[in-house]
Length: 331
Image 1: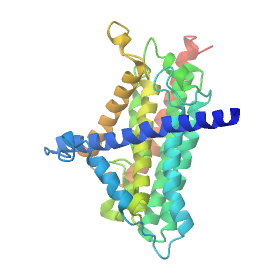
Image 2: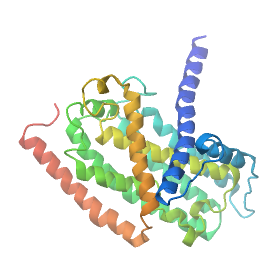
Image 3: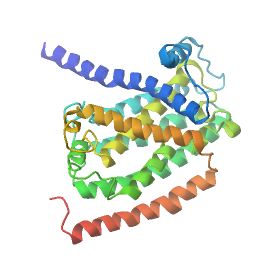
Image 4: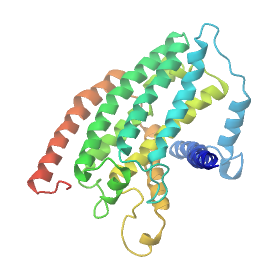
Protein backbone atom coordinates (compact mmCIF):
# COMPACT_ATOMS: atom_id res chain seq x y z
CA UNK A 1 0.00 0.00 0.00
CA UNK A 2 2.84 2.33 0.88
CA UNK A 3 4.51 1.54 -2.44
CA UNK A 4 1.31 2.44 -4.31
CA UNK A 5 1.11 5.73 -2.39
CA UNK A 6 4.72 6.59 -3.29
CA UNK A 7 4.10 5.74 -6.95
CA UNK A 8 0.95 7.88 -7.10
CA UNK A 9 2.78 10.72 -5.39
CA UNK A 10 5.59 10.56 -7.98
CA UNK A 11 3.06 10.50 -10.85
CA UNK A 12 1.35 13.53 -9.32
CA UNK A 13 4.67 15.41 -9.18
CA UNK A 14 5.45 14.51 -12.79
CA UNK A 15 2.05 15.77 -13.96
CA UNK A 16 2.48 18.88 -11.84
CA UNK A 17 5.72 19.51 -13.72
CA UNK A 18 4.71 18.59 -17.28
CA UNK A 19 1.19 20.03 -17.66
CA UNK A 20 2.02 23.65 -16.66
CA UNK A 21 5.10 23.63 -18.92
CA UNK A 22 3.13 22.35 -21.92
CA UNK A 23 0.44 25.00 -21.37
CA UNK A 24 3.12 27.67 -20.88
CA UNK A 25 4.87 26.68 -24.12
CA UNK A 26 1.58 26.96 -26.03
CA UNK A 27 0.94 30.45 -24.61
CA UNK A 28 4.53 31.59 -25.06
CA UNK A 29 4.51 30.65 -28.76
CA UNK A 30 1.40 32.82 -29.19
CA UNK A 31 3.12 35.65 -27.29
CA UNK A 32 6.26 35.23 -29.42
CA UNK A 33 4.25 35.55 -32.65
CA UNK A 34 2.34 38.58 -31.37
CA UNK A 35 5.58 40.39 -30.49
CA UNK A 36 7.01 39.73 -33.98
CA UNK A 37 3.76 40.98 -35.51
CA UNK A 38 3.84 44.14 -33.37
CA UNK A 39 7.41 44.94 -34.44
CA UNK A 40 6.56 44.33 -38.12
CA UNK A 41 3.26 46.29 -37.91
CA UNK A 42 0.94 43.38 -38.64
CA UNK A 43 -1.69 41.53 -36.61
CA UNK A 44 -0.24 38.07 -36.03
CA UNK A 45 -2.48 35.22 -34.71
CA UNK A 46 -5.93 36.74 -34.12
CA UNK A 47 -8.55 34.43 -35.70
CA UNK A 48 -8.51 31.03 -33.95
CA UNK A 49 -10.09 31.64 -30.53
CA UNK A 50 -10.17 34.93 -28.59
CA UNK A 51 -7.19 37.08 -29.64
CA UNK A 52 -5.86 34.04 -31.54
CA UNK A 53 -5.01 32.20 -28.28
CA UNK A 54 -6.07 28.82 -29.71
CA UNK A 55 -3.81 29.11 -32.77
CA UNK A 56 -1.02 27.17 -31.04
CA UNK A 57 -3.49 24.43 -30.06
CA UNK A 58 -4.63 24.21 -33.69
CA UNK A 59 -0.99 23.89 -34.81
CA UNK A 60 -0.40 21.15 -32.20
CA UNK A 61 -3.41 19.19 -33.46
CA UNK A 62 -2.08 19.53 -37.00
CA UNK A 63 1.26 18.04 -35.95
CA UNK A 64 -0.44 15.19 -34.05
CA UNK A 65 -2.47 14.07 -37.08
CA UNK A 66 0.27 14.57 -39.66
CA UNK A 67 2.03 11.48 -40.95
CA UNK A 68 5.49 10.79 -39.53
CA UNK A 69 7.83 10.07 -42.43
CA UNK A 70 11.19 8.41 -41.73
CA UNK A 71 13.71 8.54 -44.60
CA UNK A 72 14.53 5.12 -46.02
CA UNK A 73 18.28 5.57 -45.52
CA UNK A 74 17.97 6.95 -41.97
CA UNK A 75 19.05 5.12 -38.83
CA UNK A 76 15.49 4.59 -37.62
CA UNK A 77 16.17 3.91 -33.92
CA UNK A 78 18.39 6.96 -33.43
CA UNK A 79 16.10 9.04 -35.68
CA UNK A 80 13.13 8.32 -33.37
CA UNK A 81 15.09 8.69 -30.12
CA UNK A 82 16.52 12.14 -30.96
CA UNK A 83 13.35 14.27 -30.50
CA UNK A 84 12.28 12.17 -27.48
CA UNK A 85 15.62 12.86 -25.77
CA UNK A 86 15.45 16.57 -26.61
CA UNK A 87 11.95 16.98 -25.19
CA UNK A 88 12.53 14.77 -22.11
CA UNK A 89 15.70 16.61 -21.07
CA UNK A 90 14.06 20.01 -21.61
CA UNK A 91 11.17 19.07 -19.31
CA UNK A 92 13.36 17.32 -16.71
CA UNK A 93 15.41 20.43 -15.99
CA UNK A 94 12.31 22.21 -14.64
CA UNK A 95 12.16 19.84 -11.64
CA UNK A 96 14.51 22.05 -9.57
CA UNK A 97 13.18 25.49 -10.60
CA UNK A 98 11.49 27.22 -7.62
CA UNK A 99 8.47 29.26 -8.76
CA UNK A 100 8.08 30.50 -5.18
CA UNK A 101 9.44 29.60 -1.75
CA UNK A 102 7.04 26.64 -1.53
CA UNK A 103 6.31 25.76 -5.17
CA UNK A 104 9.16 23.50 -6.27
CA UNK A 105 9.17 19.85 -7.36
CA UNK A 106 12.60 18.90 -6.02
CA UNK A 107 14.57 21.18 -3.72
CA UNK A 108 18.11 19.78 -4.04
CA UNK A 109 21.30 21.41 -2.77
CA UNK A 110 23.04 21.17 -6.15
CA UNK A 111 20.25 22.64 -8.28
CA UNK A 112 22.66 24.69 -10.42
CA UNK A 113 24.78 21.64 -11.22
CA UNK A 114 21.66 19.64 -12.08
CA UNK A 115 20.46 22.27 -14.57
CA UNK A 116 23.94 22.61 -16.05
CA UNK A 117 24.22 18.83 -16.49
CA UNK A 118 20.78 18.49 -18.11
CA UNK A 119 21.35 21.43 -20.48
CA UNK A 120 24.73 19.98 -21.48
CA UNK A 121 23.07 16.68 -22.40
CA UNK A 122 20.51 18.49 -24.56
CA UNK A 123 22.99 18.80 -27.42
CA UNK A 124 22.91 15.00 -27.88
CA UNK A 125 19.32 15.04 -29.13
CA UNK A 126 20.23 17.53 -31.85
CA UNK A 127 23.41 15.67 -32.86
CA UNK A 128 21.52 12.37 -33.01
CA UNK A 129 18.76 13.90 -35.14
CA UNK A 130 21.20 15.42 -37.61
CA UNK A 131 23.39 12.31 -37.89
CA UNK A 132 20.53 9.77 -38.08
CA UNK A 133 18.84 11.67 -40.94
CA UNK A 134 21.68 10.57 -43.28
CA UNK A 135 21.50 13.89 -45.11
CA UNK A 136 24.21 16.51 -45.34
CA UNK A 137 22.13 19.57 -44.39
CA UNK A 138 20.79 18.13 -41.11
CA UNK A 139 24.30 16.89 -40.34
CA UNK A 140 25.82 20.36 -40.94
CA UNK A 141 23.14 21.86 -38.68
CA UNK A 142 23.85 19.31 -35.94
CA UNK A 143 27.61 19.95 -36.04
CA UNK A 144 27.02 23.70 -35.91
CA UNK A 145 24.70 23.26 -32.94
CA UNK A 146 27.18 21.08 -31.03
CA UNK A 147 29.98 23.64 -31.41
CA UNK A 148 27.69 26.57 -30.64
CA UNK A 149 26.04 25.08 -27.54
CA UNK A 150 29.30 23.80 -26.03
CA UNK A 151 30.99 27.16 -26.63
CA UNK A 152 28.32 29.23 -24.91
CA UNK A 153 27.81 26.77 -22.06
CA UNK A 154 31.38 27.65 -21.06
CA UNK A 155 30.45 31.36 -20.87
CA UNK A 156 27.25 30.63 -18.92
CA UNK A 157 29.22 28.47 -16.48
CA UNK A 158 31.74 31.26 -15.80
CA UNK A 159 28.88 33.77 -15.38
CA UNK A 160 27.17 31.51 -12.82
CA UNK A 161 30.43 31.37 -10.81
CA UNK A 162 30.08 35.12 -10.18
CA UNK A 163 26.68 34.53 -8.59
CA UNK A 164 27.86 31.53 -6.58
CA UNK A 165 30.72 33.58 -5.12
CA UNK A 166 28.16 36.04 -3.77
CA UNK A 167 25.88 33.31 -2.35
CA UNK A 168 28.11 30.43 -1.29
CA UNK A 169 25.50 27.83 -2.23
CA UNK A 170 24.41 25.81 -5.28
CA UNK A 171 20.79 25.73 -4.07
CA UNK A 172 18.48 27.85 -6.23
CA UNK A 173 16.30 28.88 -3.27
CA UNK A 174 19.39 30.11 -1.39
CA UNK A 175 20.37 32.19 -4.42
CA UNK A 176 16.97 33.91 -4.41
CA UNK A 177 16.97 34.49 -0.63
CA UNK A 178 20.46 36.04 -0.87
CA UNK A 179 18.95 38.81 -3.05
CA UNK A 180 16.48 40.07 -0.43
CA UNK A 181 18.44 43.32 0.05
CA UNK A 182 19.69 43.80 -3.53
CA UNK A 183 19.21 41.87 -6.74
CA UNK A 184 22.42 40.61 -8.31
CA UNK A 185 21.56 42.40 -11.58
CA UNK A 186 22.90 45.59 -9.95
CA UNK A 187 26.47 44.55 -9.04
CA UNK A 188 26.68 41.95 -11.83
CA UNK A 189 24.97 43.86 -14.63
CA UNK A 190 27.66 43.10 -17.28
CA UNK A 191 27.27 39.39 -16.45
CA UNK A 192 23.49 39.70 -16.80
CA UNK A 193 23.87 41.13 -20.31
CA UNK A 194 26.34 38.40 -21.33
CA UNK A 195 24.04 35.76 -19.81
CA UNK A 196 21.13 36.95 -21.96
CA UNK A 197 23.21 36.90 -25.14
CA UNK A 198 24.71 33.49 -24.27
CA UNK A 199 21.20 32.16 -23.56
CA UNK A 200 20.17 33.19 -27.07
CA UNK A 201 23.10 31.24 -28.52
CA UNK A 202 22.53 28.26 -26.19
CA UNK A 203 18.91 27.90 -27.36
CA UNK A 204 19.65 28.58 -31.06
CA UNK A 205 17.50 31.72 -31.03
CA UNK A 206 18.04 34.53 -33.55
CA UNK A 207 20.42 36.17 -34.20
CA UNK A 208 22.25 32.91 -33.42
CA UNK A 209 19.89 30.41 -35.11
CA UNK A 210 22.70 29.12 -37.31
CA UNK A 211 22.02 25.37 -36.75
CA UNK A 212 18.64 25.81 -38.47
CA UNK A 213 19.46 28.69 -40.81
CA UNK A 214 16.77 28.24 -43.47
CA UNK A 215 18.64 30.22 -46.12
CA UNK A 216 21.64 27.88 -45.85
CA UNK A 217 20.49 24.54 -44.39
CA UNK A 218 16.74 24.34 -45.26
CA UNK A 219 15.80 23.77 -41.59
CA UNK A 220 19.06 22.38 -40.23
CA UNK A 221 18.90 19.30 -38.03
CA UNK A 222 15.07 19.28 -38.29
CA UNK A 223 14.95 19.08 -42.09
CA UNK A 224 13.94 15.41 -42.38
CA UNK A 225 11.46 15.44 -39.48
CA UNK A 226 7.69 15.73 -39.77
CA UNK A 227 4.55 15.42 -37.69
CA UNK A 228 4.79 15.00 -33.93
CA UNK A 229 8.51 14.22 -34.03
CA UNK A 230 9.16 17.68 -35.46
CA UNK A 231 6.87 19.16 -32.78
CA UNK A 232 8.95 17.46 -30.06
CA UNK A 233 12.06 19.36 -31.20
CA UNK A 234 10.02 22.55 -31.26
CA UNK A 235 8.58 21.85 -27.79
CA UNK A 236 12.03 21.11 -26.36
CA UNK A 237 13.42 24.33 -27.83
CA UNK A 238 10.74 26.53 -26.26
CA UNK A 239 10.91 24.66 -22.92
CA UNK A 240 14.68 25.37 -22.88
CA UNK A 241 14.08 29.04 -23.69
CA UNK A 242 11.65 29.35 -20.77
CA UNK A 243 14.10 27.44 -18.56
CA UNK A 244 16.91 29.92 -19.24
CA UNK A 245 14.50 32.83 -18.69
CA UNK A 246 13.59 31.28 -15.32
CA UNK A 247 17.28 30.72 -14.50
CA UNK A 248 18.07 34.34 -15.41
CA UNK A 249 15.26 35.50 -13.13
CA UNK A 250 16.62 33.41 -10.24
CA UNK A 251 20.28 34.36 -10.72
CA UNK A 252 19.90 38.09 -11.33
CA UNK A 253 16.32 39.35 -10.78
CA UNK A 254 15.49 38.00 -7.34
CA UNK A 255 13.30 35.08 -8.42
CA UNK A 256 9.95 35.26 -6.64
CA UNK A 257 10.92 38.36 -4.59
CA UNK A 258 8.96 41.57 -5.21
CA UNK A 259 10.95 44.51 -6.65
CA UNK A 260 10.17 46.74 -3.63
CA UNK A 261 9.36 45.42 -0.18
CA UNK A 262 6.42 47.78 0.44
CA UNK A 263 2.65 47.32 0.62
CA UNK A 264 0.83 46.25 -1.59
CA UNK A 265 3.71 44.81 -3.68
CA UNK A 266 4.99 42.61 -0.85
CA UNK A 267 1.64 40.79 -0.44
CA UNK A 268 1.45 39.70 -4.09
CA UNK A 269 2.21 35.93 -4.32
CA UNK A 270 5.80 35.09 -5.25
CA UNK A 271 4.70 32.89 -8.15
CA UNK A 272 3.26 36.01 -9.82
CA UNK A 273 6.58 37.88 -9.63
CA UNK A 274 8.49 34.84 -10.89
CA UNK A 275 6.12 34.44 -13.85
CA UNK A 276 6.29 38.17 -14.60
CA UNK A 277 10.10 38.13 -14.67
CA UNK A 278 10.18 35.07 -16.93
CA UNK A 279 7.80 36.81 -19.35
CA UNK A 280 9.88 39.99 -19.21
CA UNK A 281 13.04 38.12 -20.21
CA UNK A 282 11.16 36.19 -22.89
CA UNK A 283 9.88 39.50 -24.27
CA UNK A 284 13.52 40.55 -24.72
CA UNK A 285 14.19 37.26 -26.52
CA UNK A 286 11.22 37.86 -28.85
CA UNK A 287 12.15 41.50 -29.57
CA UNK A 288 15.73 40.51 -30.41
CA UNK A 289 14.46 37.84 -32.82
CA UNK A 290 12.31 40.43 -34.58
CA UNK A 291 14.89 43.22 -34.99
CA UNK A 292 18.45 41.76 -35.04
CA UNK A 293 19.85 40.20 -38.25
CA UNK A 294 21.55 36.79 -38.16
CA UNK A 295 25.26 36.58 -37.32
CA UNK A 296 27.81 34.81 -39.48
CA UNK A 297 29.11 31.63 -37.87
CA UNK A 298 32.68 32.89 -37.50
CA UNK A 299 31.34 36.04 -35.78
CA UNK A 300 29.35 33.87 -33.37
CA UNK A 301 32.35 31.76 -32.34
CA UNK A 302 34.62 34.80 -32.09
CA UNK A 303 32.13 36.51 -29.78
CA UNK A 304 31.94 33.49 -27.48
CA UNK A 305 35.62 32.57 -27.22
CA UNK A 306 37.44 35.89 -27.74
CA UNK A 307 35.05 38.34 -26.04
CA UNK A 308 32.67 36.70 -23.56
CA UNK A 309 35.01 34.07 -22.10
CA UNK A 310 37.96 36.42 -21.28
CA UNK A 311 35.62 39.14 -19.99
CA UNK A 312 33.72 36.66 -17.78
CA UNK A 313 36.98 35.30 -16.33
CA UNK A 314 38.23 38.82 -15.55
CA UNK A 315 34.91 39.62 -13.89
CA UNK A 316 35.19 36.49 -11.71
CA UNK A 317 38.58 37.73 -10.47
CA UNK A 318 37.18 41.23 -9.82
CA UNK A 319 34.14 39.84 -7.98
CA UNK A 320 36.26 37.53 -5.81
CA UNK A 321 38.77 40.30 -5.07
CA UNK A 322 35.99 42.71 -4.05
CA UNK A 323 34.34 40.17 -1.77
CA UNK A 324 37.65 39.24 -0.10
CA UNK A 325 38.83 42.85 0.32
CA UNK A 326 35.60 44.00 1.99
CA UNK A 327 35.17 40.70 3.88
CA UNK A 328 31.83 40.01 2.17
CA UNK A 329 32.39 36.35 1.30
CA UNK A 330 29.42 34.21 2.43
CA UNK A 331 30.15 32.33 5.63
